[in-house]
Amino acid sequence: MGKLDTIFNIGAAHEEESLFLECVIEDDAELLYLDTYLTELFGVH
Amino acid sequence: MRQTVVPSDKELLERYRAGDSNAISGLIERHRKRVRDNVYMMVKDSDLADDISQETFIKVVRVIDEGRYTDNGKFLSWVLRIAHNQVIDHFRSNRTQQTTTESEAGYDILGSRSLAEDNVEDKMVASQIEADVRRLVEQLPDEQKDVVQMRYYEGLSFKEIADKTDVSINTALGRMRYALINLRKMIKDNQIILA
Image 1 (cartoon, rainbow over the protein chains, first blue to last red):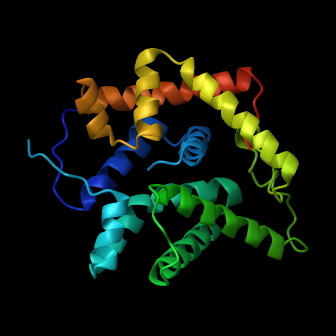
Image 2: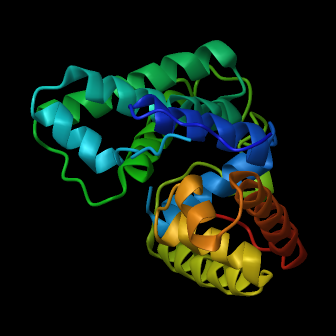
Image 3: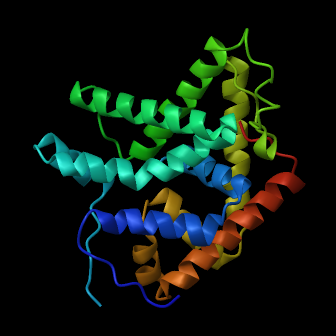
């Protein structure tokens, strides 16, 4: 996967979220839970 | 490569309140999958997860429309909390009929506690767990710790993290994945139960 060419609209953030789920979480339920836990713990998104 | 400015959740909320209905659609779409996947992990039923996720966002929009939501940079946390409460309500309303406990339904990932009322003891335990997790973050390799801190503490996008650390987005995403994998291992090795 090379450099991303993102678009100036609301879809850009949605694209990054999809990328995060695809490349970082990779359908790992535990990692998703951990990410959610850390999101709530530190509270910034 | 075209540069992009990704509107923050706060900016989208402001646009919605100013009359841009597309903004709320974008905001919901941005977090829809994350919310739905989290609900699914708890209920282990695809149709139920869809229903609860939809109820969650209906409630989110209603609260915003009624002017009862004050943004403090924690929109996703707020939405996830609503989703969790919707799941709790579902279990409670179906308690006499359900044939599985919350634990059996799968809500025990990483040893997390079953759905229960918060009490003083729970709050103290949660506070200790938070301190423990923060300590573990500090033990990550520097590159991974930086990504975690920029992601969770500062709320930066991966594009911003990549720019700030002068790496590709691929590398930033990879560091994030390894950070989560390492945190998971440290949590299990330290027998920490996430509340």
